[in-house]
Length: 261
Length: 251
Image 1 (spheres, chains in turn red, orange):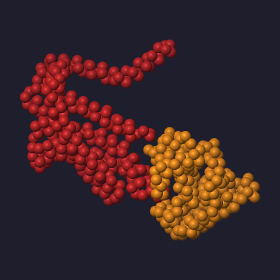
Image 2: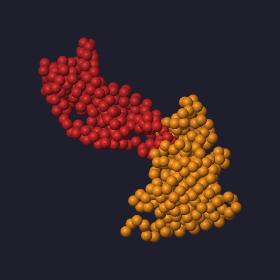
Image 3: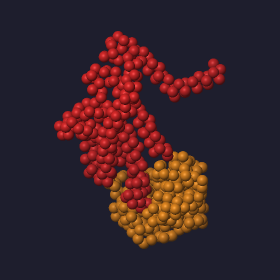
Image 4: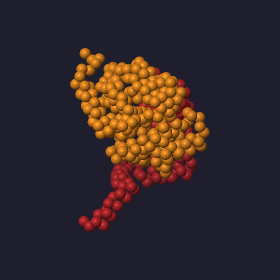
């Protein structure tokens, strides 16, 4: 093969990967199979792709999309935000106080082994049919994920850099600010990324019970009124929220924090 | 500024240092040599207040060094690794250690730039450590140690990770810095050629537990080639002793 042709083929390969062309091909195949299966089994079992697009347009026009998305995001923000604050505080305690490190590690292990359903049931008993059920569930499920990450970050701080800080007589606060925080932040951001994904999945489950807004509520409601295509619409909305936050929020954050690498 | 090392012993499972005693007058360039693993780094860490001795005392300008790093006099340390903060630029790295001296932000950065220029890093102030070579990182670490204007500079095999060419350049650089600043320098090295080339006082430690085996004034009157030969002979004996002899403290 001559050189120019070879190069142009390589260029094509790079571009097709950058545009995720192979993935798009697979998606197209799945869409075709989906359409075929939808015709075979009927719209109640499997709504055709076209009706899902129509449903998405209808919730966009009616404003339901924003109403339920914001309701879910608001609960996630409080539950996830609260867990984030506590995780950072736990990391701080673990750094300052050796005994706290053991307590934090054990707490994280215990919390990690509890099921989502435990917290949903418990919060229904404690808070009844209120916003607090999804908020509390999100909080309890994301706390160990972020706690474990922050703890790992604190434990991986380079002792040699801390010793350097001590030799040069930096105060405890200066060492914390200049050495501990920057080395922990990548772990925290990684934990936030996983935690946020988990928060979205978990809070939606908790919203099935007791609240009258949010993606989980509307999904379950759509099932009850036999609007299967709307279940698919809201699933699609969840996927989009996840992709957008991942791309815009966390990728941007990571890039900004890791300029020095 | 005078450095006094008075009967320093250190036990850590095994006896490592055994009553190491020597003095260095102001402006001396002391090179510390000895077989691998004999306790050179431990001794430097004790002098720098990074580790407590089991017995004995270190005095800097007559004042005892206490463990914990809260010396009353600033001591500059250049470690085996550069130990720069990778998330700060070279200038920020140097400016950071000036904080405890109570200087304002503008002054800290001005001093940092001055010392970076002094070690030949003019133009690289805004670079992150990962973007410059190992030799340049080690220069920045030296600039950081000098910036606090220490009376004593401790250097622990600072050129161990450099290639032969960079090593020679850095040796000449340190000799120039010593001549221009008149600092007292304690320089740990495993290279006898390096010690003879730059040191004014050469200290040979014995095999573990280390004692001062020989203290030589290298004032230029000796023939450097014969000196290197003698020291090589000594270190061979000590290495053999450390490997072959019975290890004290173990049954």
